[in-house]
Length: 377
Image (cartoon, rainbow, N blue to C red; front, side, top):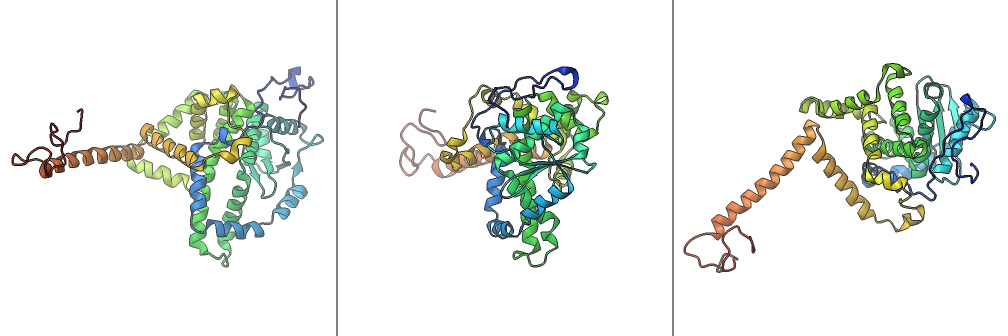
């Protein structure tokens, strides 16, 4: 962990160009609730309510070879330290300092040309970076990625990520899983849905650590299109996200759902657009000004309030979305409300109207009120 200097960047003068890292804001005692995406929280609530999830989770917690996993990385990967990949070690300690993580998780670099990173583990999180990712990103882009993984650790995502990996790679082939393949597939699907949402939360954590939106955008572009920044443009990349959301008809909306179902991560353009939107929000500005929930307050957090916030987010998402399917859902919901109101008015006219009846008798109306009207209308 870095010292209490307040400077969370490396200050070594012998880095390329001899330019020390800039100062970054730190967030003492920050709760993961400060950056967690509402969809992440609601998906996790839904996951925990899934029938059979608790039974499978408890069973797998005792079966998962976590010690074997750690030994595997220790024996066949390179552990990041002051002696190995020291620049990554500096970034890891800085990320933990910014997000005030008490213990710096071990981090490994493993040989794999596919750019990827993950945070796994049941008792303690372990961060793994592939060589493809290390070779692809520059320092500020990598800082955001490491912050992303530290965000997963702070949110406690590593446990569920480990279960997802195990179920995906092993459990589907094992006949003695108590709930059977159908139930396990349901849990895998729910886990994937949650994990895609958790990536949006971790992207926010990466921005809090790097505090450089353009670097976060560049990193996502490189993951999508490789190390060809001179051929890419952030604004054009974000325009793709807008086109993806609103293009096509209902058939395209269904295809979008089918395309994303087998994925562990959201599409990169969608992640970039979501992160930019959050960076421009009042919530982000307040957080950067030092107004954010603390971990010391987590025990007093209302689950109902969190669920209400998540529900509100989904309702607003449907309302604002340009996707044809979401627009149809919104139109149906609005039309249903209009239809209910119109039908109610007609029923009141049929059963409450009539010249033979005196006002206030047999109709539930008060003197001076007509059918379908309310007091003061």
